[in-house]
Length: 248
Image 1 (cartoon, rainbow, N blue to C red):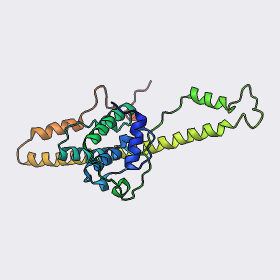
Image 2: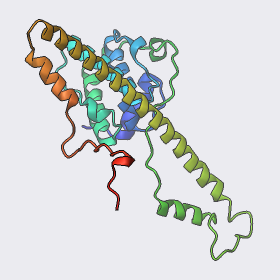
Image 3: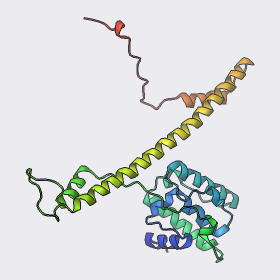
Image 4: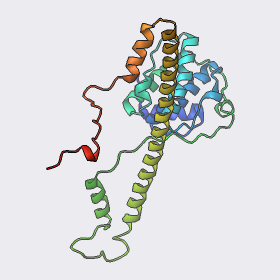
C-alpha cells in the first residue's frame, strides 16, 4: 500500500532526525542520500550537503547518489532534472519508492543519523514559495484593514493589526526569492565557466591539429554546439555610427 505524504514525512523525520515539513524539500537530495546510508552505512556523507540551498548543490548531492546506485547495482533511474525542481508530485513518487526500497533492504540495525552527519547543520532546505498576485495581496491586506477606501484611514487598532503580518510574509518571500536568485546566478556562472574551459580546450586542440595539417570531426561538432544559437534567436545587428546615418 502506498504511503501518504504525512506518513512519509513522519518516517523520514524519525529515521534521519530532521524536521522536514514538505515532501518537496527532499529535492535537495540530502535526505535521499542519508536514507541509503541508513541501509548501507557507506555513503560518503562528508560529500553530502544536507542544508543545500541552491540547485547546483542539489545536483552534487544527486551525483553522490548516482554513484552509489551504480556501485550497488541499483537499476532504478533517478529523475534528477525533475527532483531538483522541488515539485511535490515528482518527489512524492520518488520518496514512496525510496520507502519501499528501505523496507525491503534495511537490516534493522541501529543507525545514528546525527553522528553520520558529524553534527553538520540540519536546517531544512527551502522551497521557493509562489509570489502572491496583486489581487491576492490586495485581498489579504484589505481583510486586515491595510488598504484605505475612499481616502479614509481605518479607525481602531484591530483594523490594521493584520497589515504587519501580511507585510512580513511578503518580505519573507522577497528574501527567499533573493536567495534563490543568488543561487541561480552562482549556478549560471558555475556552468558558464565549465563551458568556457571546454571552448578553450577545443580551440587549442584544433589549432594543434591544424598546424599538423589534420582535423577532428568530433572537435568540430563540439565547437558547432558551443557556437550554435537557439532557433528563432537572431544576433542583434551592429548599430551604424552616427556619422553614417542617413540625413534628411
